[in-house]
Length: 357
Ligand code: FCA
Image (cartoon, rainbow, N blue to C red; front, side, top):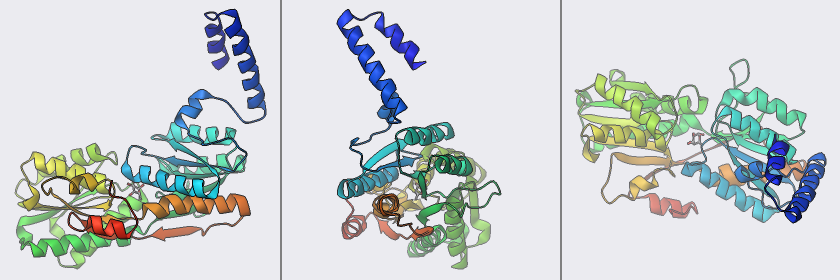
């Protein structure tokens, strides 16, 4: 197909350029045979820093537009610059793009891939492709699910200690509710859920568990599933819930990440709830910085700041050691988090060597 398109273009060229194009096409064909590749469409979505024969490692993420994933890439790039390997960053928002990314990396001769896949059920297919191409594989954030519906324990993984982090959210919601003197009868929890993803379910289950263990009534816990794990998905899910419960005066909000809570806060603002009637606590501590930087406080009260540096720098470094020195990383690594609010985020992030830009 590409060759057909190239031939069509030749018709409009002058003889000198035709000569150059033919040489380029032959060179391209030779590179393809050697497995190096020269596909321009691939290089526009994949940014490899050089072709110097240094190990090449792919870093594929499901939501490249989200600050969390941009930070992972930034830190992974630091590891690449310091370690002397090439990092190929690819955004793969759907299954088709994720599988194409693996093929693309295979064709480029990547030695290892770190991936947060858009659908964890692609795990067996991605694992098989990597095995066939002799590519080492490490999942980050979202753990693959096997054909039996269970986490794929054979694939190396670095993720957050999701239930504990959820529990931090639940405890902080309860403490802040008490601080504000809200009566449980007038208050309810809006938990925006995304149960098809294990790490998401663990987070919201953990938040509900800690909140109810602290004494919050189970009858006032309302869950609402988001269809897509982004701000619009949470916005829609929360609007459904608000229609069902018009009598609630004060809302506590939790979700799988900052985007989920930001979507819920926006939906509540749309129904007239302000910062004094809402306590939203997110997870990531990255996507929510825009909330904290607003002139006036919003219903987005706090977040659990995770460790994007570990998820980006450390995964890239682990993979590099694995491909270069055959040092296999731990099968599973879990990371933790710290509560940040509008008042404390700048200080905490400084202590964690994270920029607040
Ligand atoms: C998932 C979420 C991200 C982040 C990460 C650690 O992939 O979608 O927002 O929370 O886990």
